[in-house]
Image (cartoon, rainbow, N blue to C red; front, top):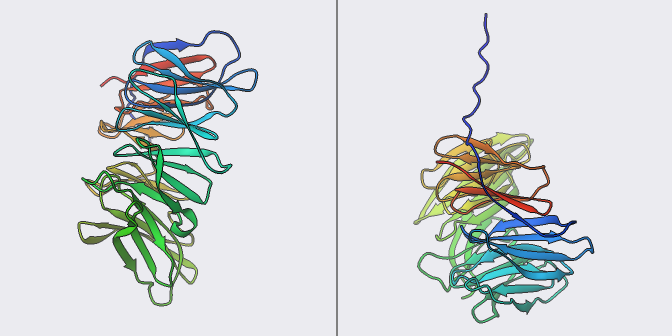
Amino acid sequence: MSLTPPSEPPTLGLVEERVHRLDGEGATPYALGALDDTRLWWCVSRPDGRFDTWIVGPGDAIRLVCGGARSPTEDAVRLSSGVFVLAIHPELHIVDGAPLTPPLSVGLDGDWPVRRLVALPNDRLVAHGSQESVPVWDMMRRTVVATVDARAMGLMSFGAPHGDPEGVLVAAVEPGLVWRGALWDVVRGAARLRVSVPTPHGAALEHSAVAVRPGAEELVALLTHRHGEERVTTLHRWAAGQHTILDERRGPTPAFTELLFVSPDWLMVMGHRTDALWGMRTLTVRPGLRVEQVTPSGRARLHPRAVLDLHTGERALVPGARGDPWCLHPQGERVTVASGPSLTTWRLPG
């Protein structure tokens, strides 16, 4: 009897396109990300312990926008007006994207570092860290338009209602004996949606998580109820006035515990032992994938170092050492890897 070896997934070839290299020695990459499809941000640590942050692109262009900082750039985003914002503790640095002018600085209250920036329409920005109060900024006016109490909201997810650039939606769990979720417009201080799920007879709620779909008044929730020694985990969706249970899993432990929209149309459902990627347009699931980003072209960034084409199933392994920062460009056509003083960009064919 002969055994047929399992077929290998088709691979995407990488074509080296461009290399940027810093002058001098001793630069160590700290973080790297895409601002848009032509510009990247790149933070490196220097031998003296300080940090430099560069804007790279378009093309061969590279420019130092923040040099000799005591703290690294933890995240950076491009706002709808084209302005770039960098989170460098204890400030937000604002850079005009065209042309690249010296950055302006906005001080942050408190001693907490910003770990993640969430860009919303109308130049709204959420500066998310480990603090209990999360500010929502209007970066055009350089003012805080709302503050969210993380303790009251629980696990938070931010979005913007479709066709309403002034609003900022937060997915939240409301306290009570019966599970209740809500979409709150924190700028106007009003609930846009309230939902509830009754606790089954003889069961107790053990865990829940919520997320708002970006650009839509759509709420998803993950609930685990304990029935004796059994856990029942259900995935819920509220959209256009309809409530749908998308999935149900049973076992001795919660099947899933976390939710994350990696794009407006793709939802990651994560657990301790398994993960699943849900396509929200088709309401179909792809089990066993840990995805960090999906581009409009259907290219997915996989943990830890691969790119998957969701249409063809082709994969590309990202070059470099395991700890080298890398990013998938927003349109999914290129990947860039930072290694030592060099930044190398590869094109993904197709």
